[in-house]
Length: 153
Length: 103
Image 1: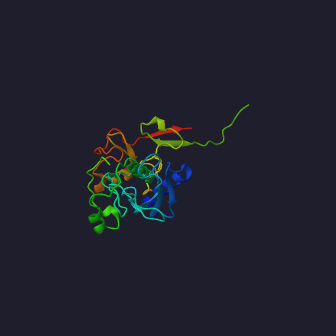
Image 2: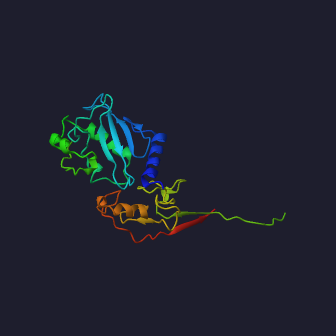
Image 3: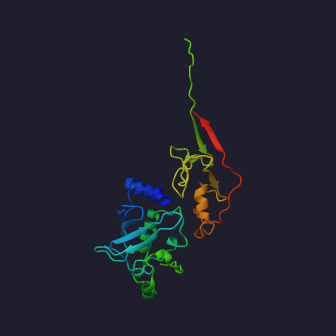
């Protein structure tokens, strides 16, 4: 039986293939319904000019009821963005990936949100607890209970 | 000239009455959770219709009942509407009443 996630993801994939991605976002890998990768650039003036990032989505069979596991990954020539909400292992502290996930969101909606999170950044630095977090972080960022206490960056 | 009707063929179409006349296009509206048209069925069902009905919230948002219940059944939902994050309250007024039109 086809899972909920594969049906929904094949619809999202078709929309991306027919309508394209928003500016600065490109689908790079979607060979299956478990793991997709996008390239992400911030358009216009920002602290991330001329930088390109790789964003990875991992889905379980209950997507979109259960949120995707989203993180930045290091790939050829691309680093993890330096941002107060992005840990050096690629994990992202963003409420829509955690306790504010909603099944009406989509892969592209998440990409756009993270793009604008980077675009509005005013100081390139790692989260304060980066070293402590990265040392013990689980492989899957969904297993982390982040505190979303800072809406200003 | 006389015409004798030997056989006739009735064609009917049904659509959930979502109270949204704007959605009268070919596609109609889709459930925000599974992205399947309301007239289709949720991913867990095979046959659309009464066995896979819609559910209305007091907030006016509409979903396939099975999709919404799956979401509301998770702790992550906090029993909130996926669209506006208000506490989900099922609306009583619209018991799925199919609108019948013929062509």
